[in-house]
Image (cartoon, rainbow, N blue to C red):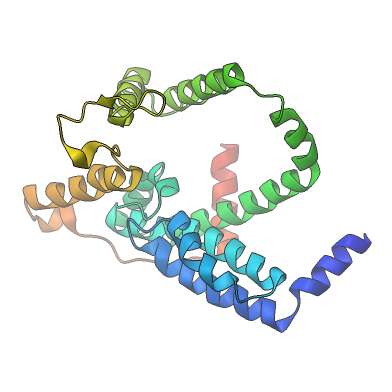
Length: 252
């Protein structure tokens, strides 16, 4: 119990609070810009942390990273363009709620889920980090291979009601991942003698091409009918009512 009391005293310092607010605002801006991920946010803040004390530096990194991940829901809900790769999973659903005039509902539920998930993950990390560290040290190449297969198969099965489409998307993603130099042999694969493809296709440009460019072309190609493109007036809702509605939907 003394550890938690000392930790609370450390983060209740005014310097730490100011650092959290400033880093959170910066993470909000970076996450809301499509293509600027939380990893890039942390990379930009690393030089600044050299001039800070350890506690404010850790607070800056944690608040900026978590805020950037949540802020990726903003362009995903409003423009159907995920701000971060983590927001791509439910980008279409959030945008559908926005077109129904429920943008605050979509963003509110995303914020509530982020807060709850953050508390749960931190609690699990506090308890299970030493056990997981000892267990991870025993992993070899065989375990990593089967773990990757498990993750890919689970992502395919839960992707949609049609696993065939999920499996086809999985194969397409693996095909794109093979472009570039092989990490083991250094052999160029599917580069077509192009130097630009030697490094492979980065994840961020691929995500922008899949979502942003596709949405722009979709908007330009369809007819601008007021009945089909009009977005209803956005209505605000309290966080408590959003949580109650999401809990009722979960129970149903």
